[in-house]
Image: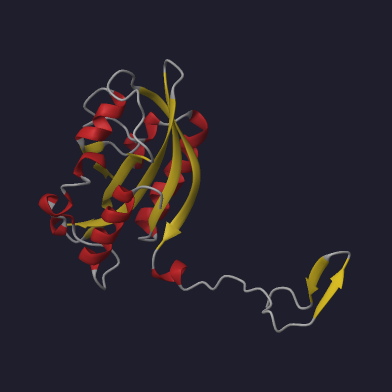
Length: 194
């Protein structure tokens, strides 16, 4: 995660869920996340309406220059990203998995900024597929915030977060005790990855 806001919200969400797949909507206390509240939002899980905003933080609204409540979350994205985002929201809800992604914001004047998107599943009154908690924060605050407004977003690389992902072992390379040969000034280690 590149944004401090993303890390803080994910850590809080993870703490609030405990051993459950996701926390209950009522478990999220705005005062506990006041430092990231401006970058946070809640969307309704409503594929037919492209997941309208239920709440949107002040900094998220400032990026777009308007109040986002009631607007379709998916419609803020370029055409290519919309299909992927619809699938991503479905996976977050169906598999109760947290997802983080990069995003590129572009204003009508042509200015750009890198953002980070976090989507987290929530139970709402004991049911899944009702609400998603999210965060959309600039990696670095763009100089144009307040003077220019985001016209469109483009989705970048994404990855799932959670206990199952964290247990996957990355391949390891051979240790220095492995057989080695020197050829043309390069050191070659036999064995490669294990």
